[in-house]
Amino acid sequence: MSRPQKRSFSIKGHRTSISLEAPFWDALRDAAAEQKLTLAGLVAQIDDARGDDGGLSTAVRIWVLDYFRRRAELNSYDGGSRD
Image (cartoon, rainbow, N blue to C red; front, top):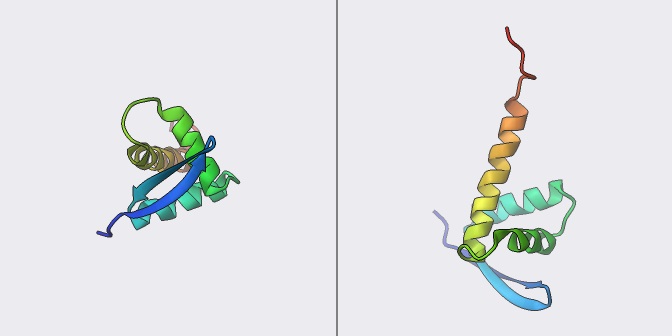
């Protein structure tokens, strides 16, 4: 398991840092590219949606997990055939 790596971002005019393990950074970069967003732009969207429940690093990890789970479900959907 890799040690968390800290990165800083400006979100709504203030600096913030998040710490994630390398696989989460890689997945977050992939998701940002798929959505045609910058990494900072995606982190800002996650920050907007998270509310006051927990820290930003936790919110990013949960978002990444949910994003790739939803993508996997869409890729495995068979169109609802009844065969």
